[in-house]
Image 1 (cartoon, rainbow, N blue to C red):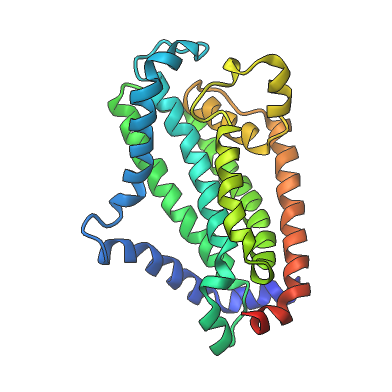
Image 2: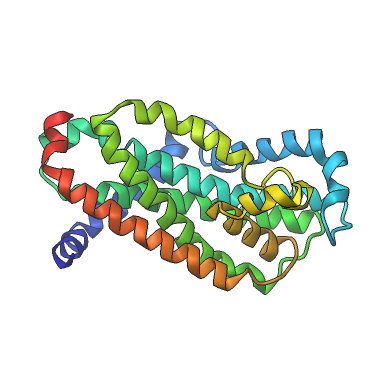
Length: 264
């Protein structure tokens, strides 16, 4: 572990430069540039809000704001998009960088660190823009939003741990890359992002609680929409799970490290 941390520290400028370049590339190669970081999730919000707002707004407990459902959607998507972006990047990290891995000798763990860093920058930009939108909608911003900085590392660790395990397997079994999007789509509807959890029958809600993203997304709803702290004991359990997944991912990566380049 010390050797890994030492390598990452030695390559810190390479990591930071890569994250900056990844973010700036959005501005250079696109007419709308970094606006796409915001426009894509906002388009999702507009679609769901237009279709489901009248149906589900009244089902949000304790919310009587006209834009309550839009705020609910944006809060959930903020958490969901971070998880999916990191998971997707880590899943494809070795395949997408196959040429670099074959030709250049550098610590391979810098690749997921760069991917995670880029996703965090994008999510922070989205978080800041969403808060401006909340103010325009008349939704007050409170100090509870500071819990965002507690929740983000947990989501990042959960996604990175899961994504790296799948990413290593994906090098040897390419079907993984095809299966994961299907599972993510199922998971999206198995997480109360578009709908409030109280519309789910009590029996199925117990199954819903087994989904770690349910707790994380509900935490975003608490701090953004309801101006309440998240369920900290539940968050601590998810953090432990995320940490365990990261250690498993590191173990799997080290065991497969010597074979990855040969297979690529």
